[in-house]
Length: 131
Image (cartoon, rainbow, N blue to C red; front, side, top):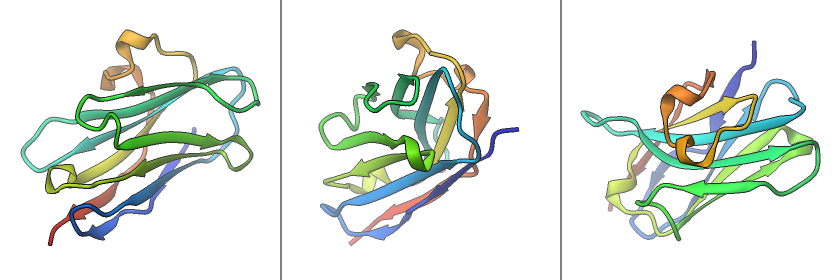
């Protein structure tokens, strides 16, 4: 059973940056898709970003939700089994619990934003943005 552990959340001011990390309990071979979603109180879970790659090399295809495109960057460190979410220019609308998700096959581009595509989920890390 793969386990995902998010970290890096906290309280920041508008305009600040924050980097989240999602550590995977075991290395996965083949094609992998990992994603970040977020959920604010009273709202549906929202797609933030995803990265899809094959093999043990670097790189991968990245995908972003419309609300964060241009401000957030998803990346990975294969040696550390970790995916990161760099969040810049944060606004109060970005405040939410951020959850990491994983699927150990490729997810087609048109479906990366669907929660039903992912097999494993972390418990989330809280991000608060307030002045």
